[in-house]
Image (tube, rainbow, N blue to C red; front, side, top):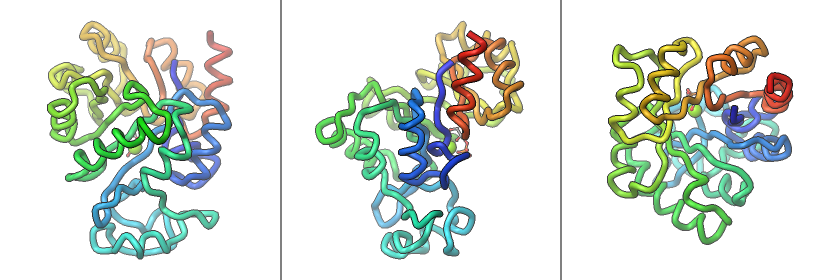
Length: 232
Ligand code: G3P
Ligand code: MG
């Protein structure tokens, strides 16, 4: 099972900050997941549409300027990072799952990815683009079919993983609350990998192992890596 550091190693450092990214790299994760929004045309790494939960500021991202957002403290004195800063920090050392949280992010992200290949030692197959907004994923595939996309769901659809196959996705990313053996088998029969979020509990990790899922998103990468090593 692959280990994705969810929002970086967010159980140890403030989520979606460069500190959390560096901690995840130190823990030798397979991949890092970050959430991406747009502010004044700049791609920034933050989960919510509001800055209230993860910074010392208040307000909606689309009502604040990029400069105002950069002046906020995202925890331990960290700025809300740009996606480019995250790419520079990782510098091709692991896979990166870019979760698109907002409209209008596809074109700037694809431009940045082209740049990252040259500047930050990545190859295209190290990227996995995911979103709950499947229209964004469709757009990515239409522009660059060779890129891998992961279709996110917070439910167990009647037709199981069919929606992800329909998108020509590499993987389906499902909330742990809705995973079951039927879903895993259905996804695998369709040639899709199954990645489950958010899995921090040791019993849950065992259950994911026995269900045969391909990877987990976790806030505690080292704990998860150790548990998985014991299961193998
Ligand atoms: O990508 C997995 C997971 O991060 C999706 O949900 O809300 O934590 O971004 P959320
Ligand atoms: Mg996310």
